[in-house]
Length: 328
Image 1 (cartoon, helix red, strand yellow):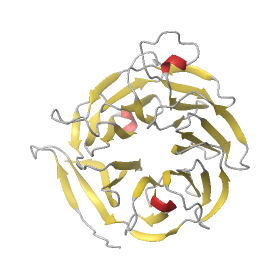
Image 2: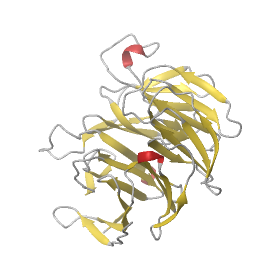
Image 3: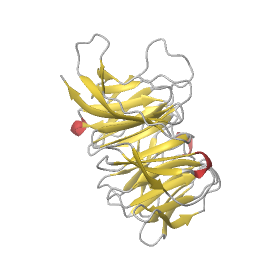
C-alpha cells in the first residue's frame, strides 16, 4: 500500500475567492464502493470489493484494522453517531452491524433480496435503516435487532435514505405514481416521509426529478438528482422546492451527471454537492457557487461529509480528506 500525504490549496478559477485545504491523501490496496466518516471525522471506513472493510485513522492516514464478516462485495457503509458501531451492506442483500472496538459482527440482517444501496443510523443511534434494489426499505433496533417496519414502495435505484431529526420519520426516494394519497402523476419522484413507528407515509417533499442523494437538515432538506441538480425544501413547505440549481459545468456530457453526495453545512447557509463524475463544490443556499471541488474521473466518486471534513474517493481506491472550512 502506498501512502501519499499532501497539503494543498484549491481555489476558484479566478484565484480571488475563498479556498479549501486537502489534509490527507492516500491510496488503499482494494477497490472502494463506499466510505463513511465518524461524526468527529477522526476515523474513516472504506468498504468495497471482496467484502474488504477497512478502518482508518484520518489524522495520519494509518490503517487501524479490518472488520470481520461477509466476503461478498460491500456496497454501502455507515458509522453510528457515537462511533461505536458500523453498518455494512453487501451485494447479497445482507446488512451487518459491527462493534468497531472489537472489529467483530454484532448481528447480521439477511432479509433483503438483492444488492444493498444505502444504510443509515438514526440521530440517537437506536435504529439502523437500509434500502435495497429489491424496492424494500427496512429498519431495526440496534439494541436487540428487532425489525420495526417494512416499506415496500419502490425506491429510486441510486437513492440514499436519511432520518429526519426530531421528526420520527425516515426520508426516502419513492415512485410518485405509487405514493399513497397523491393522485397526480405530474411529479415523477418525490421524497417520501415514512413514520418510524409503522412505515405509514406523511406528506412528501415534492420534486420533478429522480433523487440520488439526500441530506436531511433541521429546518431544510437538500437532495441531488440523477441529472446533476441540487433541490432544497423548507420543512414547513414540503409541497414545493425552495431552490434548484445545476452543479455541473455547461459542457458536461451525459455520462456521470448524477449527484452522489449532498450535505447541509453552516446551519443551512452552505450546501455541498458532488456528482458521480467528480464535479462539485460548496454553494450558498440559493445555488451560487462559493468554491469548486472538481475531481474529474471516468470511473466514479463516493464521498461522505462529517464535522466540516469531506472524505472523497475516486479512481476506485484514492482517498482524499478535504477541510470544507472556507478560508479567505
